[in-house]
Image: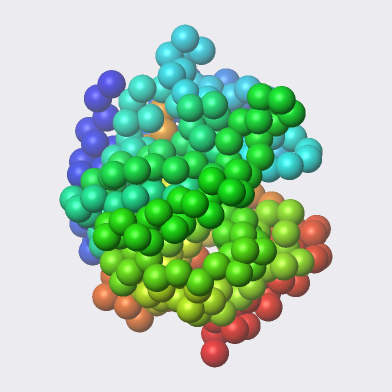
Length: 368
Ligand SMILES: [Zn+2]
């Protein structure tokens, strides 16, 4: 597959905030939107009904005209814009309860998502040719390779040289279920601390927090070690610790410097990684746009105002979610770090007050 603007976009700096960079995203998005409009019947009908056509995209502000497809539709229907035999990977979310999120990737779209993830991590100073030991608080991709988090972790271990990769969640044949292998995980912590090689820890923050507390861990993994969290505090929202407090805790218990602790926000249906800069803010790359909309009438809200998150991306030619309307609240802001550009604040999920309360508490502390 050859897509001129998208190929060029994915070769460009992910945090390019220039006019030329913006134009490149616009061109790439238009190219992608035209493809889905042509090849996905539902998207075609929806956009026709709402009076939108991809040819209407001529300036940056026109991007806000693209109707969002509600995220729940992707949970209820198997949407793809290419024949099913061109799908090389189906990802599902690891969420518990309710309907699973899914994403269908063709070879071209899969290559694109790998490329953009590498570009983003490289620009944030997180890609490195030296060797690391990896401790992943997620599912072993050998047995869970269709789970979004296992896929993300396997992807993330490819941005550096690697020595040993240990997966803390394995498959228990007897119980026929996944479980956290606590004793092996504690052994891995000590083995890595003594190895003389820096460590990278990946995975759910809640699991890491629990195991440190339960085993009263206090180690020094070295100042070159990193922690990359993702997946939020799913199902453990009541135990959620504000980001900067969590950073201090990890520095104290594992010896990982605060600026080497980065959180990642991603949605299976969207696929763009929003990653913390060293100041702990989730940056929006030029491979995406984020709008916020009123939960009452879906109207566009001014930049900085809290609303339902509406994501645009252009890399995916198999899954018709170039314009995805979510049920998550957030807002767009600015960071004063050297990357520049916009950042994403997450403000909880619509209709789940407990989760919302914790996320808002975390944000209050972040603003201090
Ligand atoms: Zn920043």
